[in-house]
Every structure is written in structure tokens, then in C-alpha cells.
Image (cartoon, rainbow, N blue to C red; front, side):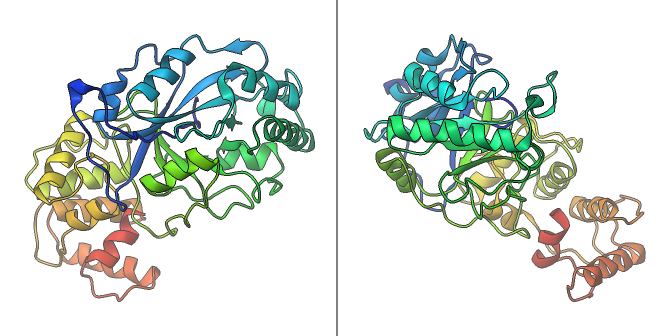
Length: 379
């Protein structure tokens, strides 16, 4: 999809023979995937599988006049590499009716079948740059359009479509509707390191699109569940996602991200022996440093910085300490309103700023930055 679509596919086997067999992921390991469209002209699917992808969503159609020229190549290629795959339709409520577009989607690759390797189809509803906001369609008309699409998709396939959207678009263009939360699984697009806030009515999500670039071609996605959940989802066309991580949870940061959390990550990696430029951009060098750190610490070396990697990375710092971890604290405190020199020296000013931050966040104001303070800082 574009800025908010993602994919679902788990390799039931491994990849091609050239890459060998990929080990089964542990239940607490992130189940990763991607979503692609014709913009990704060539995808090396065996390499994608070898790099740890479990699922993929592939753009099939848009409106009622566009079929992706790469759809069959990508859809069949993902399956041949052992990924569980599905198709998505990019909604154009300004062009034709919802039921007509659902038929077009099903007739051109979007059908679900209970074969254990096909995910239910996705309705991708998000903005298109250069077109009017909400496609010039009112919130009430948009809700009726989505309902018509979903009703027809359900009639044709026996399953509800997954809805792929972002909270901002949903709030503006559906009037913050909760009409689909009880029936349709959610694929949420959020590049902030957290899936929160979710659109109105949904208490959890099935897929989280975390970035528009990274290890895999196209957009980067996380499935909310285990590999077994993903297989059940493909086999039955539905499943019950677990609750999302709480608002105060460790963020998820990966290649393609930029900003404050990446700056903190780079400082912390340098504190653990890396030699990165602290530029706030999660590029290949940062990815390689993350993988090396994960390998040394017996963590899955996927290059994705989630809760377990953060916990291993952070180190307790206090008054009198020096080094990159202190610089990370100072940079985070400045992002939260302090005005410190980022000099890597934990002096009285840094101690005072830490204690003030802890007080504001209902933490013991001891001026020591341990795990409980770190998790609030990086959020």
C-alpha cells in the first residue's frame, strides 16, 4: 500500500533452497512482514524470507480501473518463498460504489480461500497526495461506502475485509466512526514507534505498519500475534488479536526511522562499544550495530529495537557518570523541555533535570536514571 498499508505472510516453510531453511520463530519474537505494490518493481522473495519475513500483503487493485502490473509476480513469488500472503485494495470512494470495488477486487486477486497460506483481503483507506481531503466525500458517505465494500466482500468470500488506515484519516474522514470495530480486524499505520492511538472503537490491531522503509522492500509491518496465530488467521480467515502494548511501553524502532528515539539508540549503542555517527537516522550502519548487539546478547538478530533490545541496551546512570549513555539522557531530557548541554557529563544540572522529570512523571525523584526512568524518557 502507500503510506499506511501493510502485509501478512508467514513462511510455512523457509525460503528457496539457496537460502536454506529459516528456523521457526519463538512465540515472543516479532512476526514481521511487508506490503508492496508496483512501486517495488523487483522483489527478491527468497531473500525476504531469509531475512525473517513471515507474511506479505500485495497491492492488487485500486478503484475499478487499476490492476497492479506486478500483482501476480509478487503474490505468487511471496507464496513460492514460503510466506503467507494476501492482497489489498486501495479504496477510491470518489470513483465508484463500495460494492462495485469489492467485486473488482475479488475478481482480480483479492479473494480469500481456506488453504492456510492466503490472508483475508484488505481495504486500504487512506489519503492520496494531490487529491481533496477525504476524496471530497462526506464522513457519513464514507462510512456507508466502507460498509458496502465490506458487505460485498463478506458475501463473496465469507470473511470481513481487514481495514488498513491511520487514526488521523479515520477520525477526519469517517467522523471517528466505531461502526467496524466489532467486525473488522484493524491494520494500523503509525510511524511513531507505537501503534497508539488506535482509531475509535478498536481496542487492538492485527497488523501494525511501522515504517515505509527498512529491512524489506516496501513498507515494514508487524503482526500482532505469534506465528501460530498467523497460520490460524490464514486457515480460518479470522483470529483474536492480543491487546496492544500499553501506552507507556518501550517503542519499536527500526531501519528507516529518524528522530529522537534513534538518536538515543545510537548513543546507547556507542555506550556498548559501537562507533556510530549520532545523526538520528536509522540507516544500514545503525541496523548492523543493532544486529551485532543483539547477537552478543542472545537476542533474535533482526535489527528491530523492541522491548527486549531496549532493556538490554539501557544502563543505569547517575551523578558523576560520563559517556554516551549520559549524552542519551541529556538529549532525551532536552526533548522533554530541559536545556542541558549534551556533553556526556552527569553533573548537578543533569541531576536536577532528571529529578524534575521524575517528579512530573510520578517516579521517585532520586536523580538516578534506571529502567523505569528510561522507559518514560524514550516515550
